[in-house]
Image 1: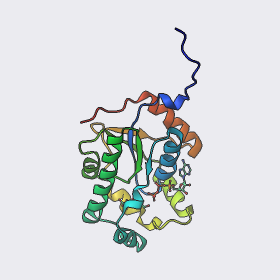
Image 2 (image 1 turned 90 degrees about the vertical axis):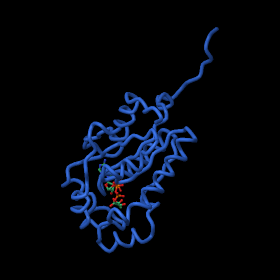
Image 3 (image 1 turned 180 degrees about the vertical axis):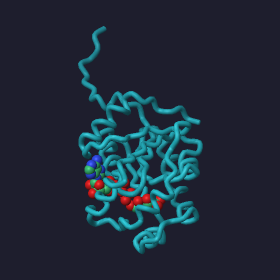
Image 4 (image 1 turned 120 degrees about the vertical axis):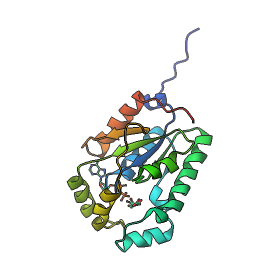
Length: 186
Ligand SMILES: Nc1ncnc2c1ncn2[C@@H]1O[C@H](COP(=O)(O)OP(=O)(O)OP(=O)(O)O)[C@@H](O)[C@H]1O
Ligand SMILES: O=C(O)[C@H](O)[C@@H](O)[C@H](O)[C@H](O)CO
């Protein structure tokens, strides 16, 4: 029997992934994650929106967060991912996820993949200095790098080193996701 003439967009061929777009402040997590969520029709959560108010106030005041500050926030991020995994549609979260132990909390028991953005530090600094309307002061960037433990190959990570602008980067990552299988549920 002849198949019905249904046209699928290229994006529909991408299996649901549960992505945490990670990296230090200013690497372009929100820009890319929003683009992915819109293009792939996956739910999006801005990780920064889950910070307790005290964390935001601390960052605004130019003080880096510590492990204790981040713990309740990471739990909320994990819980959002867990909920989305049960719904099975794919999902995208932004979260700096700077340390290995933070990523372990985020991914615990979940088929999460980290999409690691790491433009050159000078480029990231320029982006932060030129960004308007965001509470995160560029002066906190050195502490972000000091805290960062780059993901290693034994983690479920997709590394994105491209220096493309937002639109081309999005196309590039969508293309990449077509080649990367979604991990099995653990
Ligand atoms: N691929 C890109 N090329 C050039 N500029 C970009 C790119 N992606 C994002 N930007 C710009 O860089 C700045 C930082 O981007 P964005 O807010 O997405 O970063 P972020 O990692 O989410 O930051 P934060 O962790 O502080 O929320 C913004 O002004 C954004 O417009
Ligand atoms: O772990 C951290 O230190 C924080 O998550 C920061 O990365 C901020 O949330 C973000 O960069 C603000 O824009």
